[in-house]
Image (cartoon, rainbow, N blue to C red; front, top):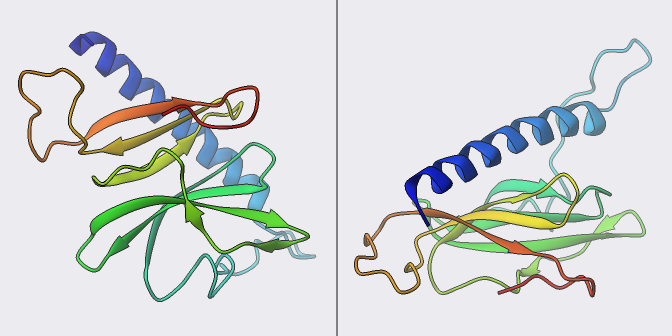
Length: 150
């Protein structure tokens, strides 16, 4: 992949993330009777929000799946997980099907839910130099069956 394509994909991801964050902020913030936003709340305390490390949440367009990264203390050992909203409650997170043994983090679901972008330090396919320790932006696509590509 050329540098221009990589830069273009990163810019597209940054723009999509900004749009999604703006939409999530307006959709998820509860308004009190006075119109003032209610205080912040943890997401599914003890299930999604635990005393472990969770970061980089991104929900599917319908809001029924939440992808996020778990990590070890010191911000290492990243792993992408998914929790499902079932009958108003979040399920215990399970590993995303596309995870690797490398650091996979910062999932971002596209606005239409057909793609999921993430950052990983996994080796580049067929690369002469894998830029050891370097993170790159990767993506998976959702098939008609609802599964993510590998």
